[in-house]
Image (tube, rainbow, N blue to C red; front, side, top):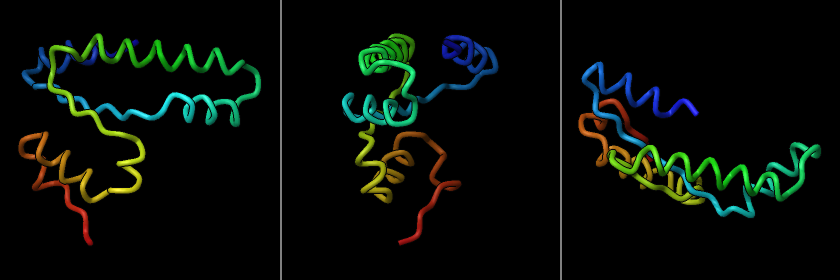
Length: 99
């Protein structure tokens, strides 16, 4: 879990960390892992996903966080980019998407 280290380094350098968390339905994540790696059980992947999400939420709770849904990112790309641009100050000039 390197997130606390990254946060500390960014803050020591004077940066304000912004976090974008992509949420996906747990069953879809487990299904994806199961297809690509047959060595572990579905329960393992579900537990791993839950533990990872809990760690991310624990370490970002006092920071600026934007939560996006996985399907929204894929299906509404322009809207997603606009949300990210609005969330992170100064990013708009570097991030555009054409119609």
